[in-house]
Length: 426
Image (cartoon, rainbow, N blue to C red; front, side, top):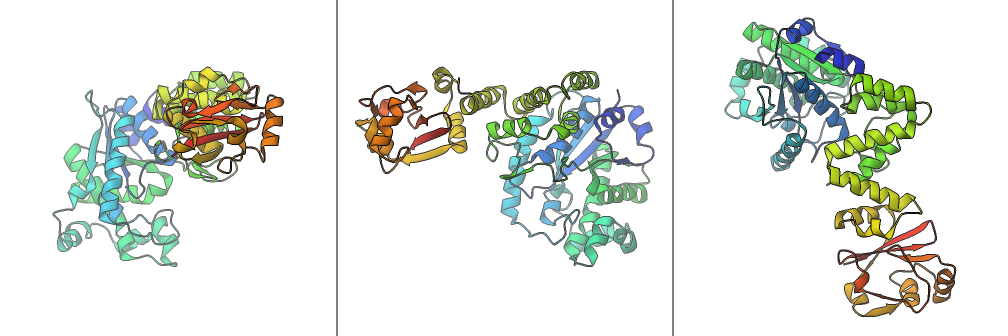
C-alpha cells in the first residue's frame, strides 16, 4: 500500500493538488509539515500531523519537521476569529526547544536514507531586512490572490492586521526555501492550512519554475461535534508535564463508541487488515476491548511501556475493588501522584506523624477529617471499612507512623468502597 492509499483507507486524506500521485509513485519524495511554537508543548491534535509524517516516512519518503521560529512570531489567522496575542520571543524560543525534544521521540531522525530532517524557518529570515522581504517575497503574489483565501476572507470584516495578513507570504516562502535547499516537493497539513499550502506551491512555480504539491487531512472532530483533544480539563497533551499517562490512557478508554473507527484509523500503526478484523469481531460486541487496545498502543508509544503499566495499575487501584496491596506498593512516586490527582487528597506536615498516632485520632484529625469524629472512625473500623495502603485495619489500637509513608510522602486510605484518600506529606 502506497502513502496515498494508506491515507485513503484511514480517512486521513481531505484534498490534494494534481500530480502528487505521480510524484509519489516515481520514488522517494521529500515532504514537510510546519509546527508553530505558540503552545508550551504538543497536543493530540498536533499528533495527527505527526502521524501523517510518520506514515510518510514509513512509506519510504523523507519527512521534514519545520519548526516555526519565524511564523510563530507572526500568528496564523487560519481558523481564528480574532487576532492572536503575540508571545514574547523568549517564550516562543522556549516552546520551540521543548517541542523539538518531543518531535525526536516520534520520528526517526537518526537512521536510513529517509531519516527525518529538522529545520527552523527563522533561519530563512534572520538576515533578511524589510526591503528584501518586500522585493523578494512580497512581489511574488498579488493582494487579490491573498484576499481570495478563506483564512483571509473570513477575517477581513472583523479585522486583520498586516502582521497576520503576511503569514501567508511567509509560509509560501518557507516552501520555496525547502524546495531549494532540500528538494522538498510536498507540503502537508490540516485542511485549514489549504490556502497557505497552495500559496507555497505558487511560490515554487512562479519563482523557481518548479512543481510542488499539497496534501491535507480533515480536521478531526468527535461524534458529538466537539473539537478533538478537548475535555473538561482542557487539551489532551502528548506530554506528561501537562497530561499524566494515566489521564491520557483513560481518555481513550472513555471515548465515545462512535469515534472508535475514526480514532483507530488515525492513531494506530496496525495494518488495514488487522484493524478491519478487530472491528468485525469487537466493534459491536465489545467496543471496550478496542478502546483498551488503542489506549495501550498509544500510551506505550507516546509515554513508555513502563508508564503504560503504571497507568493500568493506577486504573486497577481506582476502579477494581479487588486491587491488591502488592499492586499499590509496586508503584513509583509519579504513579502515586497520578492517584492523588484523581481522588481526595489531604496535606499534612511530616512532624504530624514523626512518632505514632492512634488511628482514631488520625482519621478524625482536623487536617485529615476522613471521619467526622473518633466515634465514626471506630464504627468504620468495626465494619471493616478502613484500609491503609490496602491493608485492612481491624482494631482501634492501630497506630499510624512515618513507616506507612510510600516513597516517604504518600499514604493511601480508603473508607469503604468509594471513599478514597491520598495523604501527602509536605
